[in-house]
Length: 48
Image (cartoon, rainbow, N blue to C red; front, side, top):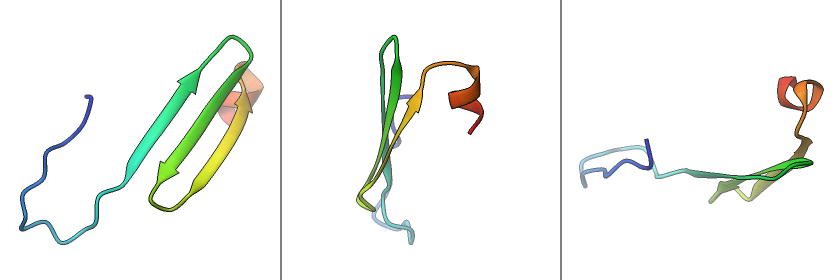
């Protein structure tokens, strides 16, 4: 699922999560909270 179109009646604010995938890393960003995290792109990194 690429995204959700919400109606104006939703009470919760929109939160967007982006994941950039490359051979060595997974970069995760959460907006608007400003959280970001880089994990190794291997089983031990994905589990954490």
